[in-house]
Length: 142
Image 1 (cartoon, one colour):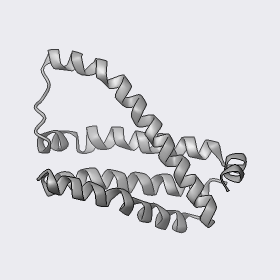
Image 2 (tube, one colour):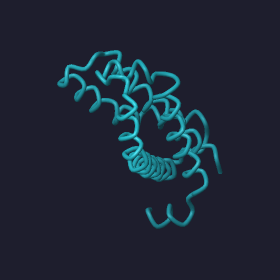
Image 3 (cartoon, one colour):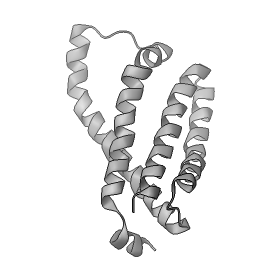
């Protein structure tokens, strides 16, 4: 099955899906919910010195995020091919089903860390929307 997937996968769809998830994260955690997310995590507004320090750490973190997005898109592509998901609605269902796998551990971690429920909605919302978006792209792009 893996060999068949590797030889027939739509690699462009997988890359675009990963970039969409990655791009959504950029918008989600900056423009849409950036200030709220920072406040709920107790992260103060960075000083100019702290901003310079953060710039050094940013590129490795962004690269790691991109690699993880590619890995997620690869697995979604493999699962979509394995179970025959090749239309939008089945793609949405696949994305929602896979989101549960990622969101439940997030709920458990936030619960034990005593994080605010609003923070969980921001974090989980990103993953649900992003995974559904990737699943749709991979499902419909033949």
